[in-house]
Image 1 (cartoon, rainbow, N blue to C red):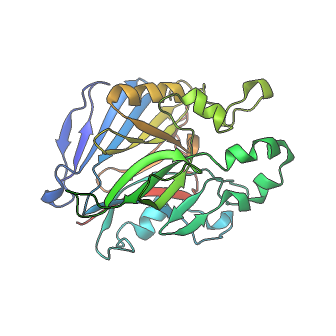
Image 2 (cartoon, rainbow, N blue to C red):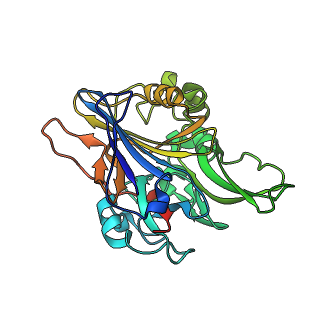
Image 3 (tube, rainbow, N blue to C red):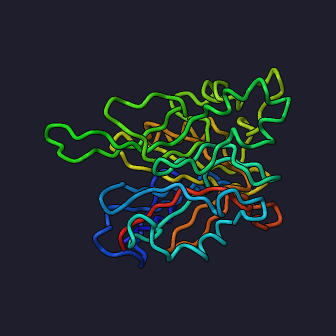
Length: 308
């Protein structure tokens, strides 16, 4: 059974059961809700990857589609949520969050996405990046930003099967000995251990040159992926009610650190932020002061699939 937590305070979420998946998944998933202040709600979906549970990067549209091919999370859910995961034949989606950066003008990715030795998105092919003269000094950093990576590492004595592990690392970071890359999705900056250093290193933040495309020190709706020392994965989405809600990236990093995260990666945020589970539906990151909740077309998602 999946658990949904409706929190009465920012520190101690109150977990209550909902109907949903089979009982053998009782300890695999949990969705928690934290009311951080009157205008800010944080949702955390916790999953422990295992033999029956995987996380996959997914495009919302056919490869090489124009911006007209991008889908909102609601459109993707309506078309795909009940379909089996391609490699398993039986696993179904149990959660999804918005993921990598993209250019809404041409629908092309600003992030690397790789799956099963195939490159699904390559930012070096995005002409609005490569032909933008103002970005030319930053392109080496932009093309080498942090990403969430799934690795398969050689069996060792006492562990006869290959070990699958998650990490957050720069695109060019060497793989550990005996490991191969299974999949990767880029975004950034890395939130831990030092978000401001990572933001500068990954060309997200150069205030003296007027560069701050994410509004790092401004409160906003945010999305992130985090990894605990035990290997649990968190999808985190911060819902902002304008004009006062949301979190800065350092505030989000501090919250994740206090909760015990070891590694964390910022995903696309603002009006892109969105989180879905079958039990709760779609939670959107941005709530305008008039109560409207815009839902943006997205390029990519991270999706949890589980045997159900």
